[in-house]
Image (cartoon, rainbow, N blue to C red; front, top):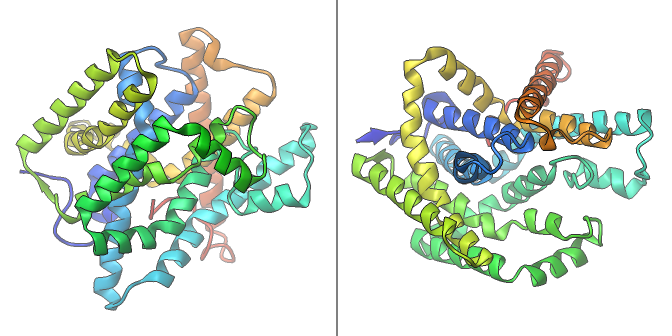
Length: 357
């Protein structure tokens, strides 16, 4: 048996280093994606580029473990505690990101007109105008909806929720135009003209990853070795089919279906990092602070592009340098956030660490 979780509902970050290690790996993958470090490389296509599904599966695991712990501790559904804790941990760093970005807008004469509507949207987490802020907008929607998702899973059962989730993935891949039309009407044409923004922040197809993470936390607490081998086999098979399909929509569906076994396999195998303690320490640090690191790199990425640079189109050595630039900028953002957190008046609210996501 390969344990990556336990029967207790203790905090994932407190007991299960594998989760933090995989979070740390995923955030480094995000930096690699934005630096185009492994573009057109199989490792990039089939592992690195799937950082978001990995994050969402881990979100499902940690959220379920958190909820079970709160119910055991308080003997009731911890709805208010859920929203309060997510708000305290996640929104102040978002506001810090928005404040820095707005300062740069003024300082560097950005063409965006800062209307009250734009500022209010940014404050609510609709980061349409900030670099790679789409993921922030997406995850905040899922956090708001998570108690409903959990209730539906309890009432309908895991099998039904997984089937519904798979159906949503297929529908989103095969019928993107109606989705874009719906999202345009909801968000009043605030996204880019190509419509991709609306697809990236459309949360229902991501339900599969959240439900899979919840199922892992509930049922597969000790993973048999043959399950790991099965997940690796399914991932390789799905990736091979994807590589040889001509239909873009169908191939994307196949790839999405293998995101879950890939994450399970990585979660079970990431423990090999123990043989090199410095790497384990780095991944733990990155995993515990992945929310702040994501926000920090988004700021750097956005302003590098605003200044007219396209590091992703440069030679590999320059892309490597840009990866390092994103990492340093993200670490700087987290370091400043943790320094602010030490100020007594801010201590109850501000944290660049992501204990709940």
